[in-house]
Length: 317
Image 1: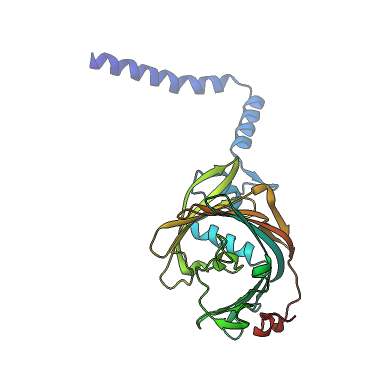
Image 2: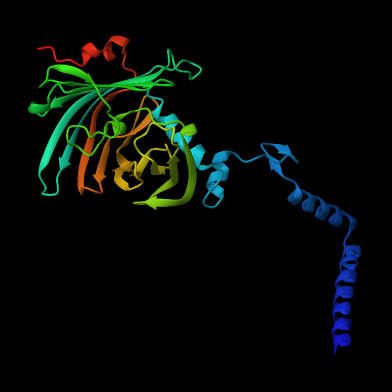
């Protein structure tokens, strides 16, 4: 049986190998030449009008064609998230929040915020200062004129101050992890400057969709040297502008404590930076949440050192 099968296979191979040249012999020479030219055209790669050259695909093309994971690493994605935020070199914004407690009671808080990037053209801090942020409450009535100042240093410890109109004085304090005016947002969440890629370990997870919007997913575990009050976060970044439309945060003891969601259809462009104008922060431990609305943003505000002086914190009737 084995000999018979072998003989049959040998006959088939022989027939196939001898029949192709025979067909070629029967073709006219002109037809053979045309066939060879057609075969050569099929095998030739033409890119941007240059025959025979193979073009390396761009990162965007690779990312679109490859399966989850793509061409961008978790660190690449986090870096693009940071670069979008840092396009706001000097900014003034007006916002308000609406908080709800477990009983459904609401409280509205109005505030304005100023922020300035102090790094030079080489992305280096000037006099060890990377940025300054000042935030002042304008309502409700009993909270008006409460102010906060945050000076973000490169090597030195950050400087943090709070002005209390009830006490009539400014005091140095630690603002890290502190909530603002009873909302579910902490001062860390208001800062336009966030940790650098050197301050954490980043892993890209499987891409997902949120309400039909394709998103990148990045898991960020912060190093012990990081100044963030969060030890870990997960970001769901919409793919067009790297703005998080969902984020989860773990506190100092490793408990997932907060979740941020933003409406993708409310992401707007300000001076080249893309910003979510409506967000919701949920405190998963207290079962409360706060809605945040951006009413005004000047991405090119002219701000001087005087705008961030301690005297600007104080209320002057």
